Amino acid sequence: MMNAFDSQTICKPPTGRPFVPSTSTLKKSFKKDMATLKFMDGVQEPRFPTVRRTMRFHIPHEVEPLIVSDVCELIIGRKTKQTRHNNMLDLSLQYGHMLGVSREHARITYEGGCYYISDLNSCNGTFLNNVELTAHRKYAIASGDEVRIGHLIMVVSYS
Image 1: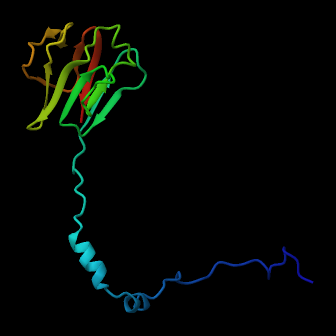
Image 2: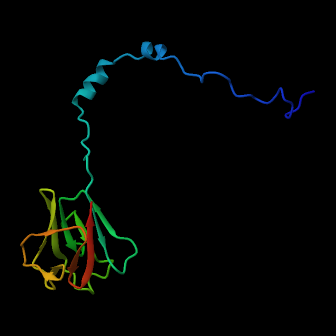
Image 3: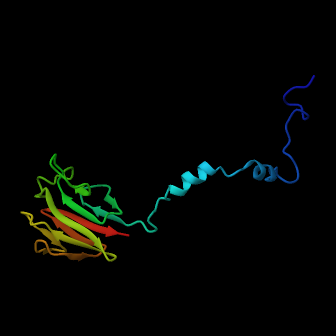
């Protein structure tokens, strides 16, 4: 009587070349269906960006930075029920109301390979490296710059 520990019942790994299925049967069974080709002819392949642009907003009292990817225009402010912008960096959870952040405080745009910030005529002002910005005028942002929105300080980095 053989048991599970007998040397003849233990499966031994195969020796020699690993098993590779023959591709000749796959080639014979694959036929191009005309209906599928017509359907695929009208479908465009999705275009993915080759380089992903990512902005990080480091806030001193937050553990993790706020991260935004592939945005050409970003409104910085506080989101409300009447907010009409899809691309908005909402600073409500970072005590934006208490720190003087307006509903639509500043705009960051990406043009010609560079990021720009402009103040949207906010009450408490927007500062770039402790210099107050003139309303509706674009200023270039470099990675590592300090942006102050009202009294909320953020360090901006991007890649």
